[in-house]
Picture 1 (tube, rainbow, N blue to C red):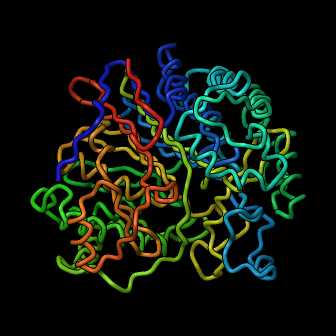
Picture 2 (tube, rainbow, N blue to C red):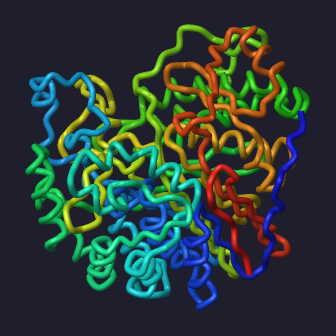
Picture 3 (cartoon, rainbow, N blue to C red):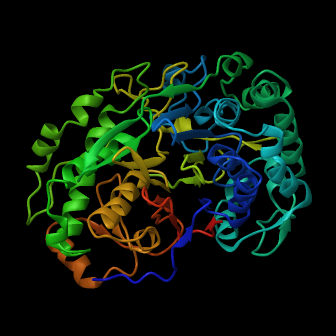
Length: 531
């Protein structure tokens, strides 16, 4: 089956920004055209997304980034994810009758890391002041913006969550989600962003904002304290990588699920995918099984490496991949695999930026699920994430809830280098689909020679964490029937918001000419902008 793209890739020389909202992409482009670098543009775009796609991201969430320095030919990984409160207690939750953390619980709220990520990136790798980078976001939240169609749909889908607490009205128009084209203002968020633009991390983690968040969380029975905010800190990590068909594929290390994508690539590398054909039954089967095995290992071992040992080298070894691949039959789906986390929808934003000098920033920013926990801190416009719901309440599990521990994270920015040159800056937002999205778009480009836009347009599968598989509408019935015949538990794709295939952005750079080619997710409202 050949899939024909309905969009052309965007091609430019001087810089490129790709993300899920045109207003955010333009915010980033303004920074590039004003002399800023890739990091400046990524922060500006991310801040704008907090305003124009608020169900997906916010200053109450977390951030990861991969940053490529073209001059030094070096890659850095920033982990700006928050930790559980120092007062967290599995026993307390067991006493309350919980066997797992519900998604709309104050106990799932962890310390927000986003602002520390922006501030650190700005101060260490950026070239413009934070006050300048946040101007577009403050302008849109103060003066209003017209809501885009998919954002309106997702906003409405999350309406029950926003109605849980009175402060949720800060994100509603007369108690309703905004319709496409309606103008909404977020004045309380504008005030908070203004404080951050002036004071950076200090204003967020050691001032009245931290006091307001911790006080509100405690009023709902939660754990967060002022000390939790004061003790928050980012980490610079060594990225993890694997070689896939001569290219080096990079991800952030644990506590993110980047290992899942790399393990799946290692397993899939042993198959001759071009020979088995583009989106044939056999190719789908091989990729699905590779992903299932990667998930099985990842969900058993990925955790906060500062609290639990994660055997990264063993998980990424080619010999282990070969052993795992040997479990895959060419005729029958594997049986007996199981996973430990329940599948949840996820709302996240991803930004890819490459500047005229070849520097790149692959950045992802998230509240986890749509509008996070649903808890809006009154008069601040801050929506608190529910990332802590990824913790296990089984004390023996590597990802068990502990005080001051980072939870398993689904959000993963990606990058690919070729002969010590940045080749791809990319990501596919969407909860547990993200590693699957990385696998599929890379296979589309590397094995089947697709350009970034076609690679994103191509229909996807989603391995659900109950071990079923969902195939996107548009995949032929003979493929579905063939996979079912092999024993795959293929579930119905109704096309609703709960069936999720992610939202990707890709920027490809020609190392010889510096020409940038970009694609933007057709399943979102976004675009790539070049100059």
